[in-house]
Length: 268
Length: 305
Image: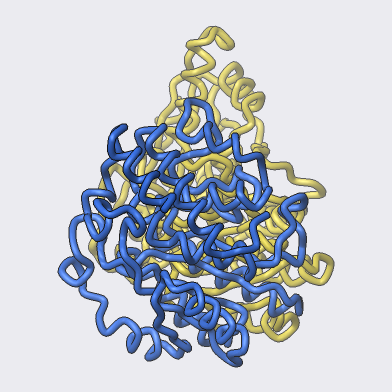
């Protein structure tokens, strides 16, 4: 269990790079951009019991951008849901550690991989919490490209209709998606104004500044009558110089030399 | 059928505090009593079907047995990926209820004709596909679904379907094929699913045709033992359904019989005739009866020879 968010975020980054390197897997860029958000959530924000992943009062966390699962798998291992050595199974034949988030892994609420699914499920879970008068909170982390999916906006309409202030959406706004810049593929701007116009509270932050992240999460908790979205401005590939803001690292896996350099940079 | 479904669902909801009903902004004059009796367990998700299924999955994950009610293609094809991934992959208790099977909403046009969805739904693992033949079967399947933990698709007609069965079911099981009439020679068997069952029953009664008649309220899973017995007993099987020929009930039965024949479980492959829609859309205005006739969903005496 790591209670320092910066220590946890850095460990998430190192394990994530190691996992994709060993497995020859893709999608490291988006894992790095959200590592600080996971670092804060799992070190101090979320209520959970690693020895009882289905604990009824746990906060629900859904990673909707399932392709960035290495960061979540690392966070869960570092927070004692399973031994850290299990991460070595990632991408191996017959392993439960798929290259998209799998609910067969302890601590993972739902599987994801097809984009635009997590927020709707989160709305259902938050609504159940309201009806059953439970005080757990529901968090969902989506990618910015994922906000192209209309289902997200359908879900936002319903969250507003139900006043789900126990629901917090975090958008990992790293400005790159599958085939280019979000500003060119399907421009989201003005994103914050769009979200607010759907009746949500919206907070824009630096998604790598832990104080920012903590303040936004605290504000979300205090918000009444509506859901909160945190637009986290991030950098894809954050923490490794040659990966930062490069679309290539949505696809490529580091070679040995690149891996060694990444680990060196992350240990500084 | 929708009346039989909703009135039984209300009775079940009184017994089962986990039952939750979501509508996709449809159900005027149908769901009001449920909404009034169980306001905490009722939601209008609006005209947003993809989200509706995701929300249903989220509620089911928190312990509810969630019914999602809408028309024909809207709670099925419009959101089939959510059904496959959110509901079925997570094996959650979501019951998708579509009214308007086949051409029930005849003159509303092809957008409202549910003529492909059964085939698409039956390819999804872990999803039970139910297609009751009359209000008595709809009621029995509603009770069954209230006690079943897992995903299910209920393909209902509309309103005013005539009863075929004369008595209620005490205990319907998933996959049951229901015998309605036994022919004296055992040669031919007519199988029907959905509300077209009534036509099948009337046709053989009026023409005095000596055949067995079965209702098939479950497209998936099929009761393999019953299919085996049917295939062994009859050398002429006619399958009637209000759905495209491809991937429908007739196809499902042919697949099963073929597998049994290939594995040696049965030694004779009976003749199986599918009476279904032949890979067509229909763009004419008309009643359900008119469209059925146009689509060739018609029985002939010589089919039973």
